[in-house]
Image 1 (cartoon, rainbow, N blue to C red):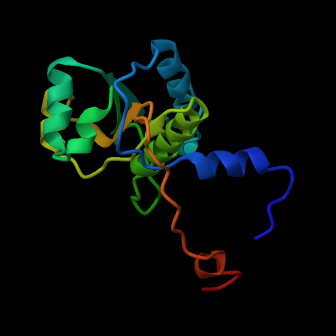
Image 2 (tube, helix red, strand yellow):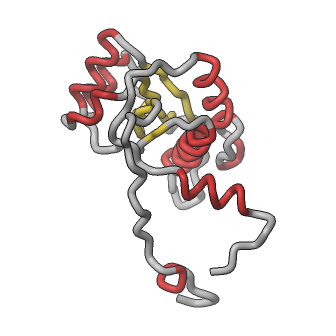
Length: 178
């Protein structure tokens, strides 16, 4: 596929982002985290409802709850976690009842991941966690649902970005009818 000259930085950024599963203990500056989260604030959402809240966790009982909610050793190495939560009562619902909370939160999470990449930070989408453990550990009210946990930090020394394995463009794009 031809890459047009107007997008080389964007393509490069997308190509650099990967699911990091090995983090350095090096701390991430609070102002860097705030800047990254500001990109989530600017993300589009259906009817501009912005049905999200982001919880930053670095230590304490909250961190323990997150770690226990997802039983993978690599997950423990992240110095920071961002828990992306949705509020279904604030989201736009299509006429047929389709709730766009998860769609809106997903867009914001990808803004977070791409912004983190610009700072040389690693991220990973984690969705296979025990929701009740996270909800209880963070004291979430019933209307707030944790959608994804994003571990955030500098990749450990020697970490290698794996080759992206993606379907060819012609396998995923249809012109006109299916």
